[in-house]
Length: 359
Image (cartoon, rainbow, N blue to C red; front, top):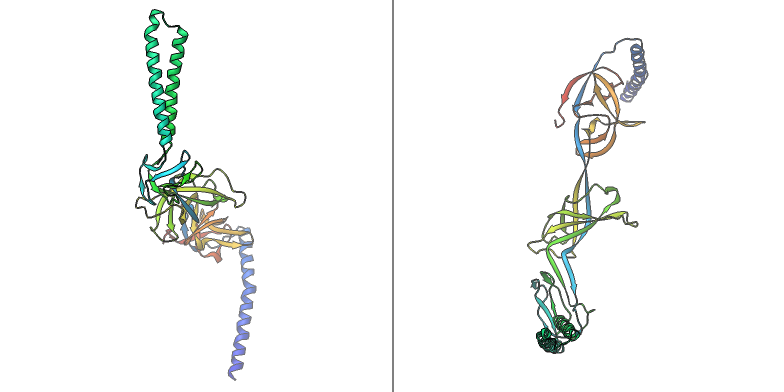
């Protein structure tokens, strides 16, 4: 007999055997079901199981954020005039109250001197009339007018001193000065920007979070931020506040986190890769291999009172080799990880091995 013919005969025999098994196996299953229905006992099957544990959902967000200084201001002069002195350069360290800019103040200084002279004159007049009041030589109305004139002179002097102080621009807080396009001799008014001032020992990083995570991220949650430029390396920070509105165009809400910048390596306006792990609700955890599928969806075979029970299990999240499921399971329950082909609802099982979750 030739080799091709031998191979053909072997193939036909294998096909007949396979067809026989496909026919016989359902009959065996039916016979088993009938026996069970009639009160007959089926032999328990050996399976391998693992204990159910509990774990929390972990949601990792990765977004782009933009930084700003913890305190920042664009400074304008309080009055109009000609610049006589500029006392700072770009990126200088500025202390609170430090004089940054001076305007011509001759007219304002003269106004202060004049107001001071008028105050002194009003004070002398009031004191003279006040001494004469007990003798009745001065009418009370005259005395009252002198007193009003004295108060008016004091107010006029205070107004003149404020106008003089407005000729000097001082830093409202400590920080770093920005660039300026002004020079001595330029004329400015109250709408002219002089420079910026940033307090950048702490930066605020703002980023947008999807609407679906509203309520799952809050004040104090930890974040990591890495500059796209790789300058300064990865930094840890904490959520400072969460916006109160959802943007109707992007379906996101705004979050701001604080970031330490004591080494001054980072700058306001830099972009960052922002990441955060959000811890969600607690769910049963089963090995990934324990989850099975059929036309009804995902499920696991649990062992309850020594019998197999089919438990629907909606997948919540995969975490490495384990899965968080929404199912009627509790920590310590056993789920089948080997022997699925032998499982039937209510079938008695013998646990050959109950592996620990991490084994």
